[in-house]
Image (cartoon, rainbow, N blue to C red; front, side, top):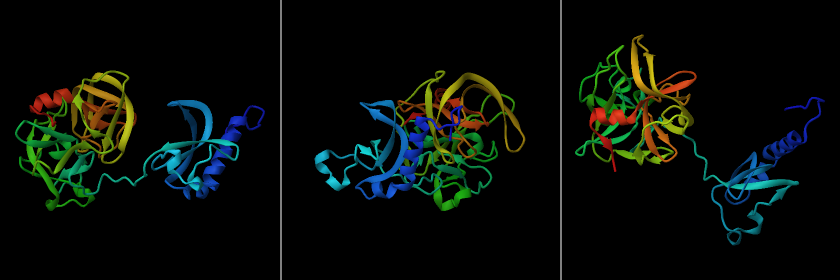
Length: 308
């Protein structure tokens, strides 16, 4: 609770407290109404713009017109003298990108078979015009150059119960990671069948195009561990070192940095802009920043493109 200098509660803080009391104490009144799934404190939206008016936000699975709603299910425009604002959210569902899913979506956990110590994220589906592949990063699917071609790639990752029977692809092509020289190369896993992986990314949908990065633009990614996160591009043409779990160090050139958007297990995620255009391939993170390969470079190196 924020107090003013004379230790009296400001009018806005008192209103916030009243709304919190409604959210915590009167939620059953609202949840008994058709399609209501929750309550919150927020600013009222009017004609598509946020106002500075605090209100009780009422979350509904779907908005209906006045004549479609029974009078007992209508949300009052004022409740206990406080404005309300109905927001269509859909149903909130528990998220788990570590479970088995078919077809696989970008953003879900993957690893190589018997790869307990290293796991990551299925990026997206790419093609060379003949076959379809899952795109991810070297250290996730080769244990830093240690595995051979045709080695099984499984979903979910081994650490989350994946077994040989969960194979979705096999190692097909990668450019070896040269420690202290260059950046982390991407890797392709040949899908066991063309339809085992969906071209969409969880929570985001279909990637529509590929773009070069621009400083300051808002971006998103979906990773197996931190799921959907947002950030901004803070640096381009970045050159930096990365230390791997085995203690080895590699030097990376011409990378993209964003505000912190990831945790361990998110490597392989695709960096997306607000128009669903792909920009980068996540491969490393710190407490403050997340690093990506340029996706234009990735696709050129492997001679593939996004699927239609």
